[in-house]
Length: 271
Image 1: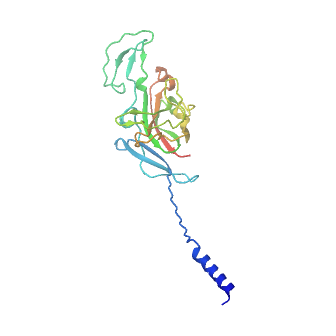
Image 2: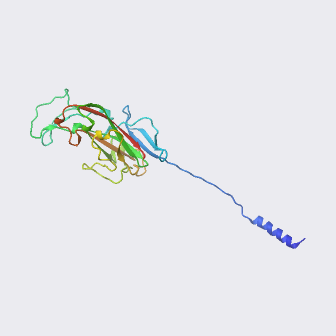
Image 3: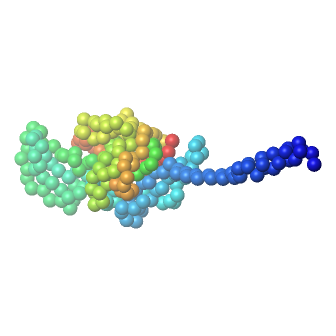
């Protein structure tokens, strides 16, 4: 046998036997969480609290999807009472110091009884009964915005221009269900108005309902409401809308008698 060939063959065999085994392992963990906005308040039947809007950001530029067909009804601010149970009207007569001289229940009408009251230079009807504040609650894992549209259902002596409007955000509270303990302000840094209300992200140029005819942006957020680990309620903030007959200065007798009723629809979406 040729010794040289034997050595070469043995070397080749050693190379084959000594080569390490190889295996390829492919792993592909994947997680996907869409942007979501949860809106709650009351429903059309008056049940509260209830989630009636669940908006997801289905894809960038593709718009949103609302997974619940129903709509949220606003509640009277500070309560879980549907706004349909609240109607504004003249409720007080005050003197020049602001002390209440007379008070009625609900709207001043023929069912009320007044006694004689003293008159001074500042005696006037009170405007408190001509302001209504309603709310809805939002929890989100992403920044969101709110558009609003106002339409008149009744205009008799008054118009949408006679109804003053403002919007603010309450970060935490308890209206029968505690909210906000794990929330942050969706408008970003704290910004307050003269009354101490939180208005970060709110378009404060909208001062009456006539300015909300059509689709109008009323809030543009910069961050999610969920600030830390918690439940939906704990990660929710409250949006408070205030409507005032007569605008910022309230109603005056010079504005006459009449009635106005509006339908305001808020649309919450992920930009």
